Image 1: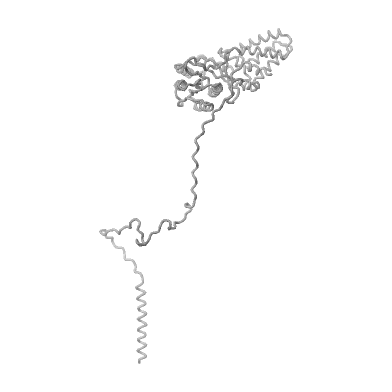
Image 2 (image 1 turned 180 degrees about the vertical axis):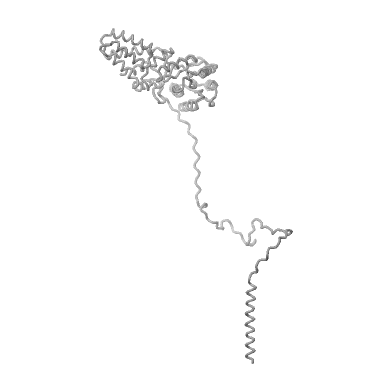
Length: 406
């Protein structure tokens, strides 16, 4: 009996223990969240954390310094910062060149001239060396002279003198023919002309030189080269860029001036050429320049309005002082058309001298004779190449020697 009671008590204790475990485990389970209810709009919103507050770290805990914090390493952080390129250096001032002296410059360039001119001299010498000089031969001589742009009237005069002198001479050796031809050609070139470029003003002002010509003759380049000629002769030169119609003309002229240390007075593109020329002469007087070179816009000799404007430039400049030199630039390859240009320009401005460009590239050296005869003014300068110092004072003897060759 006692055993039965003991077994019952043990069973009750076991069942109770098991029940306690079940109830305990059920209490540990989380309850589902309550269903959402309508918010109370009168209730105050929860307080927002203040700047610097930490969600889990108590305020009294010691804070870490920035050095103790391990920040995530990214590719951007380890990339080396490229060094900024150094600032470009200011452009150096152009080095001032020392032009070659002009004395004897044409002699030094004679070989260039003779390479293209020998056809004229050799052709004449070959014909004059014939044993019998009949009418056909003299016509060939005339043709050579006309082809070389000597001009009709000068050609006829030369042929007549040659016929007379050859008849008197009788027997003709090569040396005698060369001397004869040289003498007659030199007479045509008129060695008595004063070929000095006038840069000395009779007043207490700079010498004023105006350069004129049609488009394409190399007028602006010639003006720049003339500045070098004058600087080489010891002159203090100021340039006036009065060609405002061609966009690059003023820049081109200024570049030429900078190479020899000459200042350039210029104005806005499309500005009044007469005003710029006036300012150039005024500034030249103020700084004590020896010479003011004025580059004018290229004119078509068939355009009356443009030619009238050139006359205006001349009149405005002469309010300061009279022009000492007006140089007409002609392309030696244009032949008789160059004579037409020269004639029209001479009617607008008083041409005092001629510059022949591209004389090294043509066998038509007779244009020297023709243009001097047309205008009654001398060829003062000739362009014998593309180099900066290839503009040379014209020397008749050297020119004729180059024509007939050695």
